[in-house]
Amino acid sequence: MAEWLYGVTLGGDAPAVPGVDDHPVRVVREGELSALVSSVPLSRFDADVLRRELEDLDRVEALARAHDRVVEAAPDVLPARLCTLYESPEAVAGMLRAEHEGLRSALERLAGKVELGVKAYARPEEQRARASSGADYLARKGAKREASASLDATLEAIHARLSEAAEGSVVNHPRDSLFNGAYLVADQERFAALVASLADEHGVDLQLTGPWAPYHFVA
Amino acid sequence: MAIDPRRRTSLAGSPEPESLADVLERVLDKGIVIAGDIQINLLEIELLTIHLRLLIASVDKAQEIGINWWQSDPRLNGESAQREQVERGENARLEERVKELERRLEERDG
Image 1 (cartoon, chains in turn cyan, purple):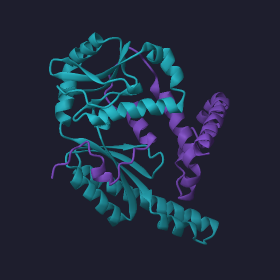
Image 2: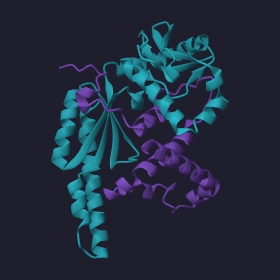
Image 3: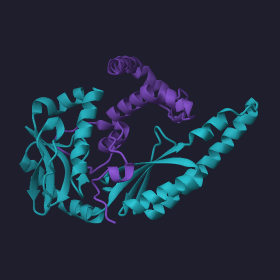
Image 4: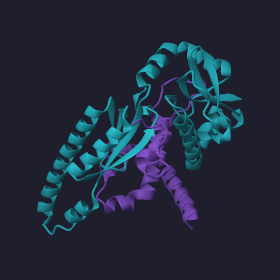
């Protein structure tokens, strides 16, 4: 067997949700720290097996969602990355001892805060208006450049306002949106209201994700 | 008014699951950096799985609303020499996986 690590809390209990492959979640305690873990069979979780299985999107999704489900069920947790595995509960306790200072100070810094994701999309009616412009090729290119620069300025302004209202902020690669930011907040309602008002003020569609455990802010 | 941090619905208004890309971005790449006993290189898997999934599921929709971020991604826009090098090595493998994913999507939707 091996121990799959979900995250670390300050003296917390195991949340009552199933873990990866429905294995039960329990804690390994060492001093004031609790590691949330599941015992998993090496037949499915040793390095060679995992590398092979992680080529399968369905397997990646199942593990990722189960891992995050446990993380999100535990208040004030420092989340571990997917596939952080230990040889035994004793090895987990050893890690907690070795990393005690860093883990405790991070947990104290993040207590009572959550991460909110904000993604920006263009409003559909604006996209349609841009697309239906009958200008010639050069004019369209020019207009696109201008629109793009103005959009960048808008997104920067939004991020600046959100960062002011948060206790930490990170900008991610946008992937499937125009903008992707993560914010560390203590007051979710206030932050959500600010997001809604910025969306109206700037005419962009802002979507909230979360609340998440503070994945982006553990360091 | 204090909100239980675990209540997703308080913000979203409906208990929809988060998108896989949003979950993967966090669990593959963020969180505490502590070396476990079993070492897996997750970054390579993240790049392939996320890009493939998004390409297949959303490229038409994204183009429809003017999103074309992949055009500035050297792995996908065909403009960088680096990408060409990677492409030569990975093309066959990627094509195979795309076909597999398309087959699975068809099975799911059919």
